[in-house]
Image 1 (cartoon, rainbow, N blue to C red):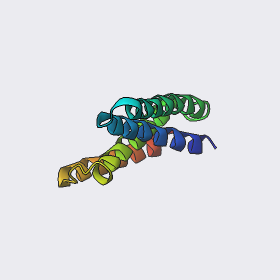
Image 2 (spheres, rainbow, N blue to C red):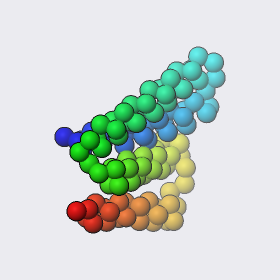
Image 3 (spheres, one colour):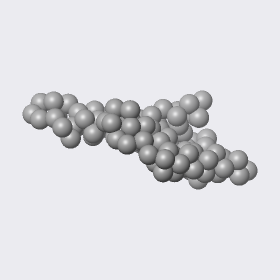
Image 4 (cartoon, rainbow, N blue to C red):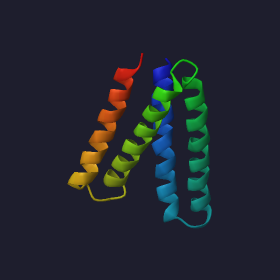
Length: 108
């Protein structure tokens, strides 16, 4: 169950990045709505991470959380904000995932 919570925390991590990206081009009330979404997901991400660390070591939970957020943010950037999907972006995103899996495999 704590791994599911950690996965949700990571999803909130890239959801707040998405809201921040949408706020960048917004004005007036719409800007405030995106910033409100940013604040909600920011707090939800931290609260869920704290809950997940009740059973998952912080040395594993934190890299997984940030990794989900980083990979999700890159994918959102590519798919939604039309950022370039260059070889090196995909390469380093893949090495990030491999590194996080490696950390989990080294856990005792």
